[in-house]
Image 1 (cartoon, one colour):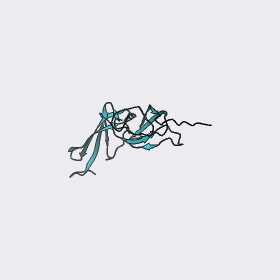
Image 2: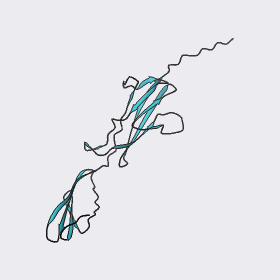
Image 3: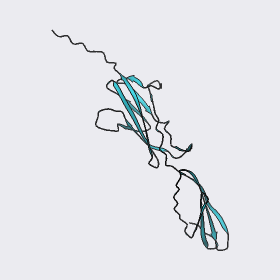
Image 4: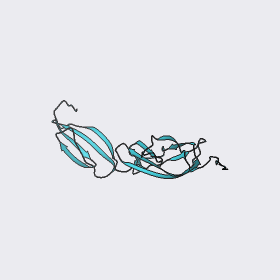
Length: 173
């Protein structure tokens, strides 16, 4: 809390130029636009003295994060076509969470769906995960990300898994 040799008579809150004078040290304010907002608190006592007690920039984030990922093979090359039964690295470190070009927070959750018929929507969680496709085919990989205030973004990418198994020949008769 704030103290003074005199008695505090008011707290003057400046929210982006809108001034609110109150006897309360705690204030709530609803910013209607996203982006950076300036908040300044000035405290006045009964002798007319004042002091700036706080000077903050607050970022209001109503923007969904941008999900992005790449798939890397064992050599670190970025690929979208690869062999079955090969461990691939899925890397979402390029995903971002910005408001008007300013870092607005952080991505706190990464959920991966590898489009396999396992009965689950999410197979892996984490910024960087490994996955191995057992069967050849075309799959759609989906990455869902969530930022620190609950905004969500997603991206999908098709991948082609090649059949590298030797054919099995069966002779009858």
